[in-house]
Amino acid sequence: IMRNLMRTGQFRIAHYLAKSAGLLAYGMPARSMERLAIEWPAFVDAIPQIRRNLRRVDEIIREMEMVIPFEYDWALDWLPWRYSFRTLSSSTMLEVQTVLRNHGIKVSGLYESVNRLSGILGSAGTDDESADLRNVINLRYGMNVHESELLVARLEKASASLSNRRLQRS
Image 1 (cartoon, rainbow, N blue to C red):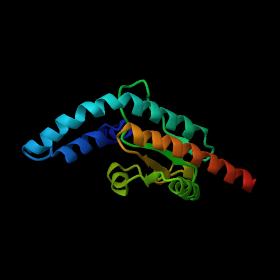
Image 2: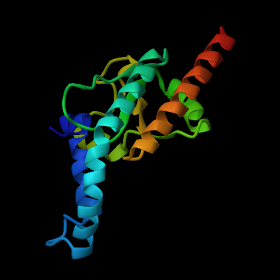
Image 3: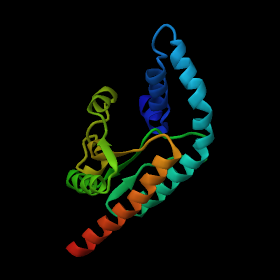
Image 4: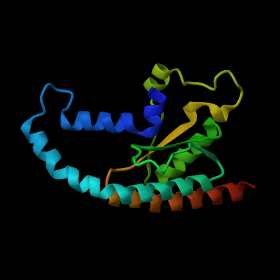
């Protein structure tokens, strides 16, 4: 269940809303309710464009040779909290992360606590390093149109940079 919630982004969105709006408290403060009422319509209106931008992110990632993309069901009416993909190995992960960061893209790995809690750490007894979820990279983006457009532009440049690095080594 947890893996499915993480994959669909529902767990992260629910956690974000609960944390940012104070929903975990017994009652939501009036100030938080007012802020949510003001910001929510603009966020909902932006979802289609953010999804289009993330779809472009998915296309760029799928063109990269050094990564293994996860399958996202873009037909669903949802918005992933973070776009994630795996790399071929831990050394590849470091190289990809470095290039992405050098292009101003915020990245993180899969949270260690999630790995331990869900029992998905490691490659299930195989020697296939690409199946190891420690090689997961999360692309972090803001939940607005401008920041998702910025991610697309930076990712296009980072992808070209990674391709050039691979050509130079060949």
